[in-house]
Length: 391
Length: 209
Image 1 (cartoon, rainbow over the protein chains, first blue to last red):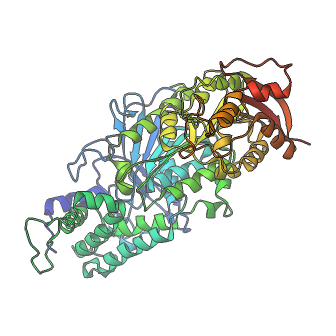
Image 2: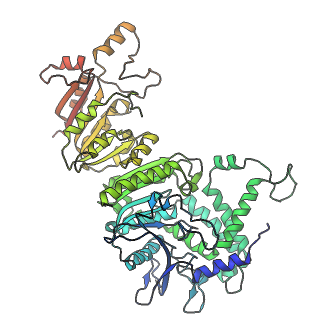
Image 3: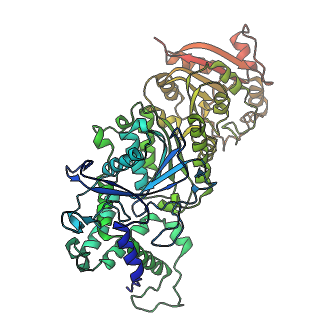
């Protein structure tokens, strides 16, 4: 496999871990973060973006939670890739989450590599990157860190927490851990626990990273290396799970890449191979391999019911938060049955719930795409919630 | 969007049902379609109205209108709701499309203080005449499906429904019948008259002792 890594982009990605092009809040020794593992993380920092203006009552804040490989640049040009914001179909001026009306916050997750403390950050104890000395973090740890940011911003109650996939997990954790601080919640393409199949896919990805000799037992940043091949393979495997068989068939079929016949070699004869190689190669330019290990691990450990005596509805008992649960018909990574189980638990807890499975052949990634039915659903829910909230 | 009766009947029963519900009530509309009744209820003060609907398009439309509607099936999803979660559980023009009407009704009376059920009366004289003289399964303005494509698998007459109410030991709080023009049939008319001239019926039930 040939990888064309622009050194500039890689340096830029490395720099983002410690000196992000974002707003930054630092929590010193007086405010350590107690992690689920028992470890204390201190000092640590959170990199975040905001859009719009917080109103005087501080009632119009919307927290956007990003997915596994996302970041805080939800509605602005990404400083590493130069691409537009990853969810600017939903968030921005005149969008469903209108930044003229709402104060939108999006922070890089704990363990990430875009400025919030993670394995690529400098460990103050050693002056070297943490690498695998970074403590394992969980989704509840990420949410506790976010809550410290929300406190720092002087916001008591979020008008809305919204996110898909791992972002949806954070939304659910917010609603379960801080029921009085979330007026409305939109978890989409997500689940209240990570399935065995999903843990299995993550394990394949992690093993690919760790099998790369350039991973150097996690200390690659110290020796100026990067496990590009391993991380790229991890991304290629994962990317398949974000799509669907019909979408792959429609987009690529068995079409050849820049040739009319097979080459009888292991070149990328097929378009789908070339596409995956590109996905892998562009991913390693912007993402830290150790972050990939930590954040996938956090998803694996996620199981809200387990934190509430094994009964999911107990996590949401008598909650006042109104929920809008969205799934996509062709999503086999977080299938509709996961959302339905969540909805049953919310109903059993007496929550106000909207739930719709949207028709799409685009697989798990549908939540990131500009799907008119998704826009209409989120719009109706947000408008009704805003009316009740007096916004 | 057509309801399970497959027509754009003006749904006078919905207005009738909405009038029965007092302010501040908690309401679950089972088979809420695209949210017509939820809209009527939302226009009234402080009614916490939620819905369940089987059709994906119906749910998407109701949610995009801002209603708390979940995609689900009356036959399988009511069991997830806790006891006494609602003041009223409503099943409008849907009971004939459920697989197990008895179980659905029992769940409604478990999760709600009251159950309100409206349904088309299969004992209406037009239907009886079609079957008797034409020898075909009846197709009328309000029941517009042919036998082979109808979602309505458990038709009943008003008398049959009263029989089910007795069977599950529920208490009938009120009953109303509407004639073919959507007018209420006078309360003092006997049951056989309702069963013959009522095109649809609206029952309010509560749990028996």
